[in-house]
Each structure stands twice: as structure tokens, then as C-alpha cells.
Image 1: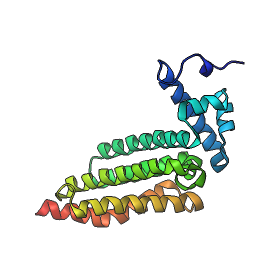
Image 2 (image 1 turned 90 degrees about the horizontal axis):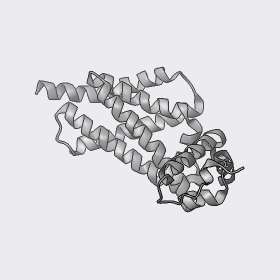
Image 3 (image 1 turned 90 degrees about the vertical axis):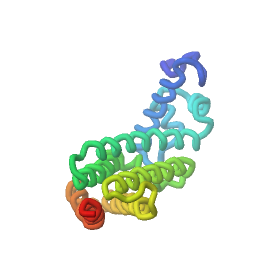
Length: 207
């Protein structure tokens, strides 16, 4: 039976972008289901197409996984930016941002593990590293604005990258061991971060 995805459109013609997004949705479902065992055949079957159609859109397996990583990380970045904008106080912004990150990896643990840790998805990890750098820079800019530090200063950038690495490492541990509810880990990380970050904010406000 011919799939709607198997029409005459070619990459670059009208409809190709929507079709590509549908294929990425199918890939995301399979990766979330199968994790490191995900295959191009399973993704094609999920989308109701043949493997050559996948290759037509993404070039090869690496291209597909890199596109999937970009899709996932862009969605996560949007969620984190929304959390930063929603909090009414600096401490609340820290809490909401940490929780948004943990909520994402909790909702899609197989996707997260596949993109970050799977050797199969090595081409996608450049996108993940790019996302982590973008996130660290975003946090650094926010810290500079909150504390009165110069934007791009060593301290603001060091804190941004340090926070990003700490939350990622804690999230990996929590996802593997599930030692506590997400809310508890969020509270613990917020308390730890706020010890330094809050002190910096207080110093800037009293200066």
C-alpha cells in the first residue's frame, strides 16, 4: 500500500519540509521505543515508506540521526528559554530551568541516552555538543544579567558551563538509578546552585 509519504514530491519541492518532519517524528518514536537498537528499517516501517526514501531525505543514517538531534535539542532549548522567561525571581528561574531539563530527559529517556551516549549516534553528538554550548552561553548571559557581571566575562561563562555540566551529570545519574522523584532532585540542585548563584546576585544588588 502506498504511503502518503511516498508521493511524487522530491527534496526541495513543496511538501518536502513537512514530509521530512513526519519522517523525523517516526524516527523519534522508534528511538524512544528501541533506544540503541534502533534501525533504519524500523524507522522506515514506522513511517510507512522504504529505506531509500529515508536516504533521499537525509543522505545516510548519520544525517538522519543528526537531524533528529537538532530537532530534539531545538525543542529542549525552547523549553529552557521559556522557563528562564517565566520565573518571577532569580531563584525561581533556576528551579524552573533545572526542572525543564530533567522533565525532558524523564519524558524521553531512550532518546536522550541514544543521542548523548550511543556510539551508533556518533554523528548526532556534534548537534548535542552544540546544544550544550548554546545552553551554557544562555545561562552565562542570564547570570551576567542577574548578578551585574559583564556579559561574556570569565566568571559568567565559567558559571554557565559549570551549571550546564553539573545538571547534565546529575541528570545522567538520576536517569540511570532513579533514586528519587524529579521534584526532589530539582530542589536539591536548585539549593546547591543557589548557594553560589544567589550569593553573586546579592553582592551585585548591594554594590
